[in-house]
Image (cartoon, one colour):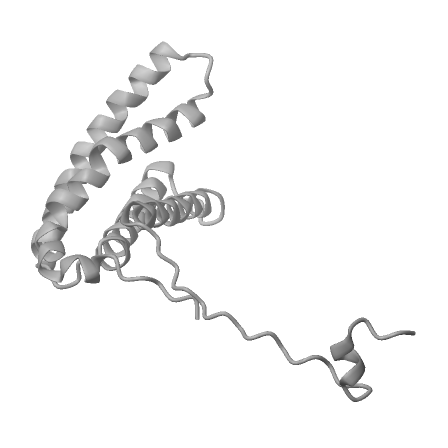
Amino acid sequence: MAPESAEAATRPLGFAAPAEPRLARKPVRLPRVGRALLVGAVASLLDLALLSAGIRWVELGTTIARLIALVASGLLAFYGSRSFAFRAQSGDISRQAKLFVLTEALGLALNLTVFRLLVSHASWVPPELTSQLANFLVFLVFTYPMRALLVFRLSALAAGPSEQDRPLTTD
């Protein structure tokens, strides 16, 4: 068997070629809106899991199970948005929590309105999909802007852009 290259011919038998220099890992940058979407997705999964577990395993009534799931996923959404999506830990948590609850209540009303409009104009679309579309539209048009411009605003200004958009490391 002939060596593959002249360099391979000069290496002692049984020794591998030197490893290629490893490229330095670049930090992963996830835009703020991407981080907010990720937090929302995780909160939605928690909501669904707690609702299903409460109804099916613990045998709670649907309203009680829904309340527990909403409170837990709301807490996750608040703390996830505050610490991960908007990196606003330095802000007044009491002020942020009050504004978060207020904007969530307004967002719920808006979500129900958008959902009803979508259902009435696209009755051929399954309501589960219509619900998710309404959630996404309200998030893009209302929830995210309110969180970015109102709920977590003061801490975002204090932290500056480098703190707000610091890269996540993959190590």
